[in-house]
Image (cartoon, rainbow, N blue to C red; front, side, top):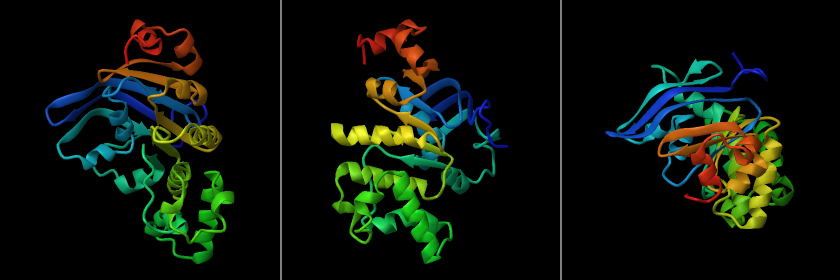
Length: 256
């Protein structure tokens, strides 16, 4: 069942998360609406990146991790026995903190995912690559050098290429883990504009250490501290009229 405008795309209920014996998330519950941008903020080590990676089971790659509670996408429990993780990661794309293009051509970077999923037709791949690069606001920059190495792009361009690569498999949800933290202010502004543009078509969850960025781009914001969800609300309300003192102390710089 796909999410409607009123129903959550992602429902997280009573999630605890462990690295071995160490518990790092405590009783997290929140709903993420479709075609909206949800920002996760909080001091370093508060659990926001662990929570983000729980939404596409990237934490499964770390030995000894364990999740209790439920994470449902389109009302389906993604942690149930037998759930297809490959399908999940196609549906839920991920963009990391540092640009990580493959040491391949620009074209082959974007075509990588579709090829893994069995698309071999050259015309079809060309269409997917062009559409993905356009969606990532990179097509006009690279259209004449698709066969050049992706490593020759600037940092900001590499990050937009990684976004194009994530979009090429047609995800419904895009997870972004501090996607602009390694970039200069001009490249950061371009990524922010792109994120706002992408919300028309995707559900976006973004981890950011930059509160101004969260205020600029997100519809809702979740504030994490010491592995707990302290407050979750509309972004403008959370930043101007926070309900919890810990939230107010964090956004006013009393700790962080």
